[in-house]
Image 1 (cartoon, one colour):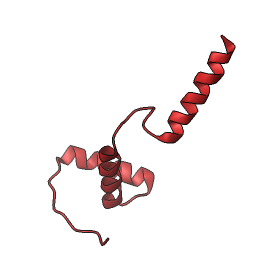
Image 2 (image 1 turned 135 degrees about the vertical axis):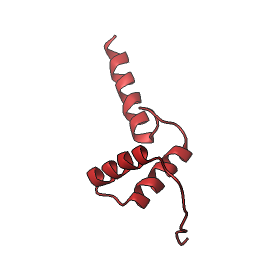
Image 3 (image 1 turned 30 degrees about the vertical axis):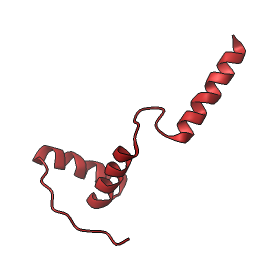
Length: 68
């Protein structure tokens, strides 16, 4: 699906922080905002948000449970 252009308003300080993150990550502003919105809309946040992290945490729980 082709990308659509949108016009949004963002506080100056927030835009500075976004631009700093884009530079640090080597991403365009559009890509960063799209990725951030997508991640937010996908659901959970925090250490258990991704399947890979949940799997790693489950493995740690199993290992630590075996030691008790």
